[in-house]
Image (cartoon, rainbow, N blue to C red):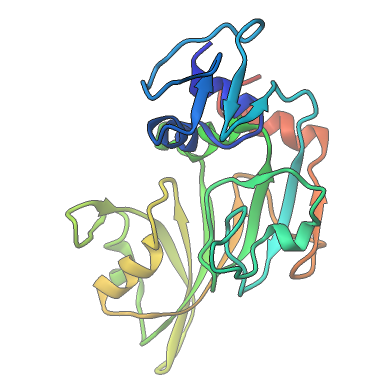
Length: 238
């Protein structure tokens, strides 16, 4: 088994973050530091450690849906001791966020210790759709919003794409729904800024088929077995 996949299945982090751990020299196999990406191990006999702590394959997988409020970071811990989404779950929950929402963004956030599923749900290859409710300054019309579909070129030359529809508009501001299948850092805010419409408020209303229906801000629940199976089918794990 590949070392990064082992770390993901052990609930340490997603496969992408596992690569970063390996490259930074924090992972050892049988007391030898391994920094080569693509390294293979025998998951039955080799001893793997991260920062000196022994890692084992995760038997109990957890899947949590959180209605994230503003003011919380989508990370496991913060060096500046700012509040994170794990503060809303309790210290006994050993999970990590699938993707991220900015500190001032609220809505649907999935957390799990299933690193392989997290990796696939966030990989552009699988085209998992996320839906957002966006409030911006200015009167945006559908013609402007249609420009998002073929793509808005961001500062570094990357093209960000999204399909949207106007929900409400007046002279002071506009509200629209935007659907994305790729995720880049602060993507929506940057797209809107480039189009001349600064974002006032941002909420993720849907991740794949998951919504926050029945959950108040800051509340969470475990995913049902049917929901987990559906997500796995979307990314070829079932």
